[in-house]
Image 1: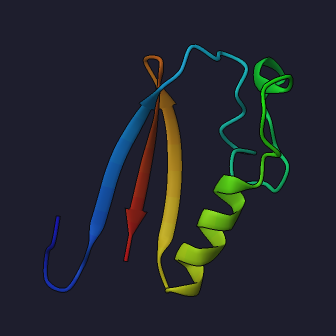
Image 2: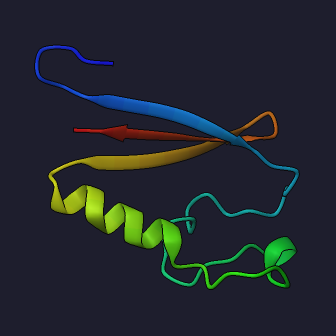
Length: 74
């Protein structure tokens, strides 16, 4: 979406993980207890957040009805 020089990107991912801590989601190396045995290091979202913030943007996430909603704005 664009509105007077503003860009906003909204997307969601399905999740069946009820233990995910949305407040820690962007912390480096955070992995929810349910996903701790899966591949990955837990740094992807923290890197994405840093890149967005370096470009003067903001990113947030919320959890509703089995989905994680992400909002990126510049």
